[in-house]
Length: 180
Image 1 (spheres, rainbow, N blue to C red):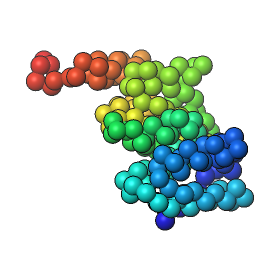
Image 2: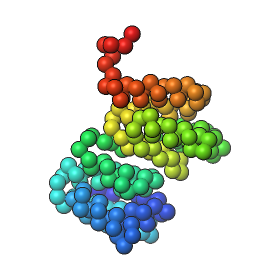
Image 3: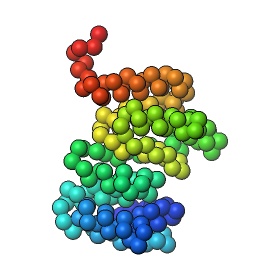
Image 4: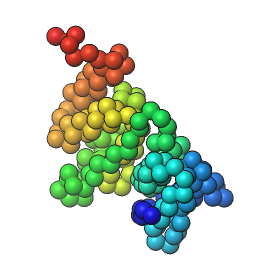
């Protein structure tokens, strides 16, 4: 049995309309969820395929960190998707710095976050003091690098150029031996 804590305002999303999301997670990940809606504690008990059961805590965590259930459930797909979480609170000095850095990561009208998604193919969600990523390992790594660049103060243009290069590598099956 595994335990995950979900923020209070995300419990309803985890449970879903009439328990629909919870039942979908249980069915597809072959687990039983015991959700304490008072504390946000979620107990996850594997009842079927142990490999699918291992992914269930990440599905619950992803929903808890702001992902829509469909994106979180994509972790069960057979294309080696992974969930990664960056704690922005660890990368910032105080609340004002956190707020400023979140603004840099989101961008004007959400454009920077959108570009991270469009150019890498990963799902990116900023919630509270975290940035969550769901995607294939190389997509997640590209987002992680872009986030690191922004947190280190790189100009947005430089980050967008990096993301464009990564996009081209990811879409054409980059061969490092052919680059000069």
